[in-house]
Amino acid sequence: MTRPPMPDHRPDRVALWRHLAMFRRDILSTQPARLYRAKMAEVKLPFLQSVMVNTPDLVRLVLSGRPRDFPKSERVREGLRLLLGNSVFVTNGPVWERQRRMIDPAFEGGRLRETFPAMWDATQACAARLEGGAVEIEEVMSHAAADVIFRTLFSLPIEDATASEVYKTFRAHQRSAPILNLAALIPFPRWMPRYFPRATRDTAAHIRQLITQLVDQRMREIAEGCAPDDLATKILTTRDPETGQTFSRDEMVDQVAIFFLAGHETSASALAWTLYLLATHPDWQARLALEAQALRLNVDAGAAPDFSILKQFPLIRDTFREALRLYPPVPMLVRETTQSEEFRARKLRKGAQVVVSLWHMGRHEAIWDAPHDFRPERWQEAANKSCARDAFLPFSSGPRVCTGAGFAMAEAVLILARLLADWEFRAIDGRVPVPMAHMTVRARDGIWLDLRRRNLGNVSGQGAAG
Image: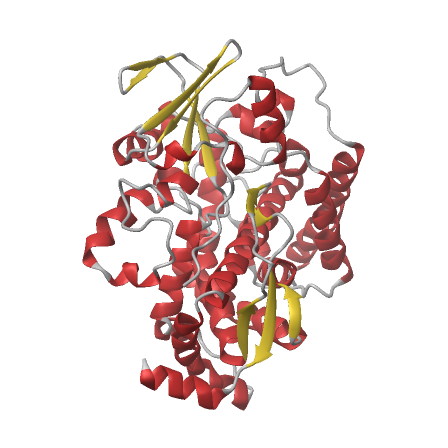
């Protein structure tokens, strides 16, 4: 059985200049191995104090117990502001609270059922595009997840000219955007200009221009009474229950930018790693393929399933959870102290950075049994319920829990079931992906898999034997 790949780790002691140089290349490989056992770690510099909290009690305190005392770090905004503006991902306080009041209704349970047909159409389109042989699966999943976002948000397939242009430009933006902006480390005054590569600035501006066109068109359709009943319409017509106001055009552009980043990039990362884990664990993949045959009648009959079919895929859901534990798309959450604090007998000054590492919590050796192993069956074990509650945080926790968590889980289970019904995924010798953190946890040189049409007779036999 193949153990899931991990990044290399830096030595415990390394010169600051070397650490910063490593950090610019990849966040994960700059972390020492001891953090998988540590309760807390501290970095203290003249211009930065940062602690990583790795115990459930401190994580609960920061994310759920006193969330207003630990708002989203202003430094997080530094590397993302060109694209995300003043979106819900980077705001705090009353601005964030207002945004969530207007966004959350679009992702409630009933609305999720209403978006399911669009998810299914995108899933079918992905299955139709697939071909056998060696495939870079991160690119395939990026395409599929972007299609889901455009269909559910704007009722547009990825083939639409504007949607396609947003997707292609976002890929270019990813390649150009630096992992670390210097202002994220050194608290420069707000008036001081920030440096970004020209390609980063140009691609962010182009994406926002394209999104503005989509928002303008939708606002005209709403005014004319002919807008589709999708997520964009729901969000644009939802009034803040406290002020009665709706989002302005510019505010909606900010929100669409984060929906695309969070709803497309994070899902693509998690789906790609899930398929790699299945490719390296063929016996488990065979069990999931048998479970996925529940979709076969719908596919063969050309009929779309309804939302309730997701209940028929418990093992696929648990497998996706296990992939999220090992490869959380957003590896770290960064909060900031609003006053002096004391954690584990260490003084934190006001403005100190508090890091909740989803990557380390998901693999912490004091919390999980065999933390670095792929064991999806752990989710059926009662002993792991407390682990899941305390250390499984791929969608964050507390008031800032991801509003699209249910959407992401439904999308992932559906796509995995649909692909596993038709395809067998095999690892390719010599092509082991190395995880690294850029905007999300991706593989340094992509994730290459060998795809082969599934022999349904073998699936049945393997499932019966298991």
